Image 1 (cartoon, rainbow, N blue to C red):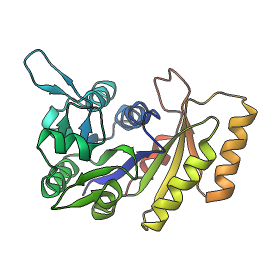
Image 2 (cartoon, rainbow, N blue to C red; image 1 turned 180 degrees about the vertical axis):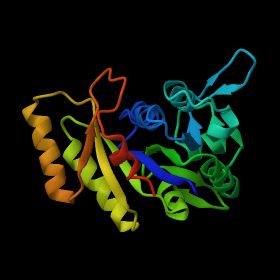
Image 3 (cartoon, rainbow, N blue to C red; image 1 turned 30 degrees about the vertical axis):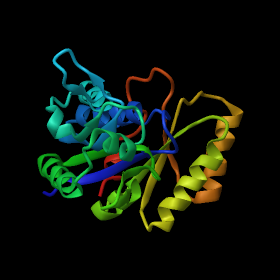
Image 4 (cartoon, rainbow, N blue to C red; image 1 turned 60 degrees about the vertical axis):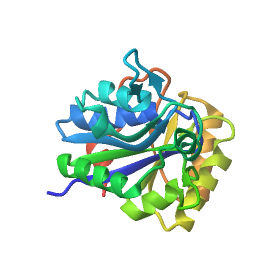
Length: 229
């Protein structure tokens, strides 16, 4: 069986995309499914004592979901400066080679039945912008043909952010698998209305709610697995 993939994007930076991604992969693995993780480019990595760069996001998912992968199999490009990947790459004189990214993605896909690919920031995140190539994150998702799961904050302002993200995904003819609300609070009338309005305006379901400090995803594993394609 060829592996299935799912792309995780956020409605913006620091929305909790990595935290939610860790819970997603953990949910699948806890149910006995062969699930893995991959990220094309990560910026804002810390430097270890030996001088190597530590990709915090990828290492978090690797640990939470107990994947046991090596860094080169988790991330293709790691940059130290906490700026957009296109700028971090330019300043590091290490532009992203998308043939390498596609090769690394396919290698991971061959290894796992369910591969979760995490994006960088929001869906309109420049990955490479130089004299040779202009590539935005959505270009990569289109090329890989992945359905997209949108991670959003449950609180104020999310209606606008989610609707604009989904409209952009549809403009690029990408399949939207669902929405996960992070930083969710039970019995919040505003958050309940946010979920209702997002569904009314986009036709896309909020498939799960993640509360602060959650150690597990409140979602049926088979319904989660069905989002992958």
